Amino acid sequence: MFNIAISVLAEKILAKGRITREEALGLTRVSGADLFDMIACAGKIREKEKGDRVFSCAIINAKSGRCSEDCAYCAQSSFHPTGIEIYPMRGVDEILETAVRMAGQGATHFSMVTSGFSPRGRDLDIICRAAEAIRKATPLKVCASLGTLTLPMAGRLRGAGITNYHHNLETAESYFDRICTTHDYREDVETVKIAKESGFSVCSGGILGLGETWEQRVELAFTLGKLDVDTVPINFLNPVPGTPMASRPLVTPLDALKSIALFRFINPTGNITICGGREKTLREFQSWIFAAGANALMGGDYLTTKGRSIKTDMEMINDLGLRVVA
Image (cartoon, rainbow, N blue to C red):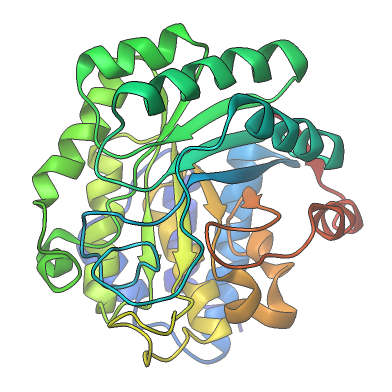
């Protein structure tokens, strides 16, 4: 028999209501066969808000390594001996070439990502020139993930044609000092606010599996809702040797799907994109992300780890009867 309590919450959301923090905490205790009821309801909420439309993101690691921040999960932090490839800002032509290739494979959004706390000088110039070139050469929505922003920086990026800005909060504020000590959570929140104020479509989420509790996942989801972010990217920890998180276990596939559904219940109208770590975490359950409430995914390679091909993702999306729409 279908779980009536979950169904009642879903009906509340479908009628344009919002669940409370206490109701969300109740969902974190769902298990067994009831979990599949929760997933089904999250899928209904996604279908009501998004129909059969999904989108696909791709990125380029435009500047790698030597980051001044000590984020415990990150292969690019200068604090961690991970042995990744380190290089300065890539050139405009190389960024453009990657964007054109990703557009040809089916991506609708393309993001330039750089390591470091904040963009400066020549790096910012290159990002702006690359954005202008991508807009002329492709139909891609141009995105950037460059670290913390000031209003003047945001204005330059908007003027270059970048429409989406990504800046993750990574985890709940109550857990953040266990993940990063080199800057304050409030600085990340301020960047999200600056991006919103500057007219960007704002993408902000986090990484699950860092050791946070279910209650802290709820805390993060409600924080993102309060900030009115447009897209919530959900990543799953892919432990990197050399980082303090190297020995952490992967999130289980069912807990990953439960998390996606939880975020959809809490943020019913926004976009939910499934990003890094999904291949290792979800394994044969990757197609279930849409049933669980997601309406977008990141394809291709990530910053320092391999992903699966966008072509394979496009086949999966088509098999599910969904449409890729920017």
